[in-house]
Image (cartoon, rainbow, N blue to C red; front, side, top):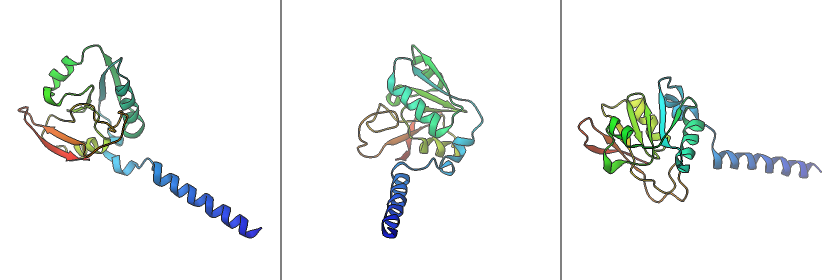
Length: 160
């Protein structure tokens, strides 16, 4: 009987460790700047776009629950207002403080942006890459996120 209890206990503990490893714990310290940010954060998206809604939920649940979501019929004016280059456009635009965040960008990149505060207008990941936050499918290769400078030029910001 004691052996049975021991194996059950070990089995339960191994299962818990495996679940924590597989699904992770919301590690606030890894997204500390974003989680504690008290300024305005707004996700502008098309009301009919499902992947944008999934991204908004991802941001809200893992990034910062104070993000405001605004549905627009036409996204062109927002992208123009904040200076998102055409070749880096995606389906939604997030504004965090003075920066734009274009597309399905993982929160780690937004955390880097907010903690380092580079002299740029925003970051962008063009299109809707498979496996990126909000997008179905499997991630294939690195997500390349670009920094957009004040003059509209861009350069690699980071790879995830």
